[in-house]
Image (cartoon, rainbow, N blue to C red; front, side, top):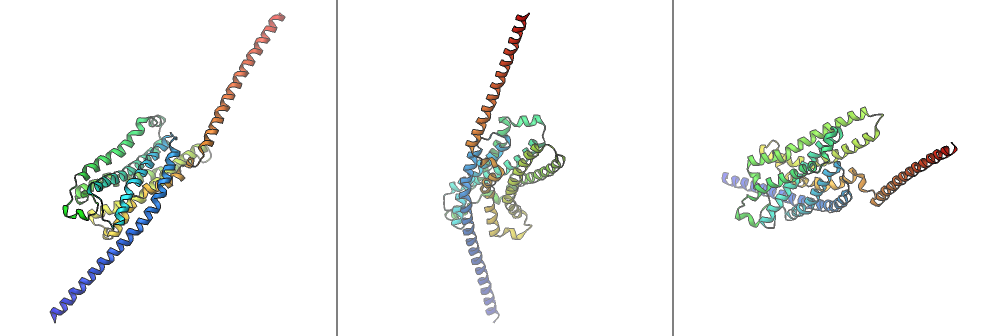
Length: 351
């Protein structure tokens, strides 16, 4: 009898475990399909809006727009190259059907572009303090081409070099190559994974949040001091701050869940985050900044919607008005000079 009860108990435990596994697999399958549909519906309009915003901002040479133009270019690259591979992985329920070389190239571009976006947003938050509150000689220094390109080259070159080294050296087991998940091997190394999370994600995220918060405080104090004067300067400061808050907010939404899952996988402070469905949602949220940066640029830069022909025509009219005013001034000077000469001649003849 005791053996019979034990067999029944183990049989019921096996049934419960198998039912849980089936439930988790069905939940993951449904979640992957939902994420697949959402990403398609968001990424396709994002590509067209991003192209439109880049085309309209291409002629804008302002320093405050240069960093966001770089963000739009990196977002377009990520949306066109990384999201299709992620959609393939979602369609095959997290199993990557392509070769290992394509998997490694995807991981390099994916991780590098996400960290590059974070570094660009971090630099833009620091740059806003310089453009609004910095001294004049630093503002003139920022207008040079070298000062523009150095942060952009660092934001692109540092993550590309780092992830190329640690991902290309990954070795996968030949047994799992027929059906495998495309994940980097450095996530299994605790020390390297910790260094990568701190330097690439956590530190830029904290700097961006802190810098944007202090920027908001300084802007509020500036508004109180410029309450009844210098409204033109206040409008410019408000526009620059609004752009930074929008991009920082979308960057925070996209990377905060992913950073929490990375830290939790190292130290296990919140067991719920280690569930597969939460990890998959956090991985999908990393594409929020690249997909929604194009939508935010439409609101952050109203000049995108202005007709360039009208602006050129207005600029041409202003130039013509200036030229006409210069001509009239010259003619007035000539007429005044001729009048003076005729008066002088008549006075000399009378004498």
